[in-house]
Image (cartoon, rainbow, N blue to C red):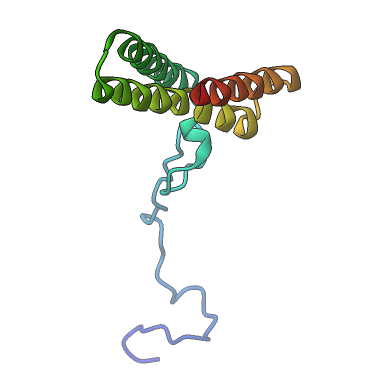
Length: 126
């Protein structure tokens, strides 16, 4: 072999270049396990996030009911009715998502959340 070049397939250990300085790139792990680039439902099921949404929905429901009671014209009553329906959905939909999607809740908590959602759907009708 001329020039000290190592051809592929030869097994002369004294002629192979040493690779002492090469290191593998460090792998960085996520602090909470693997997270996908897409938003998954578990990321949305944080307790504080859902409590804030339900509180805003309750505020819309309350203000909408007040509009419906205190406004005498039809436009104000319709706006109040729309706000109360929107508030009811803001309470019921996260409750259903939380009941069906959370792995940390018990069966009784899931039942309670579904009952709250059902009551909100009934309250939106009346």
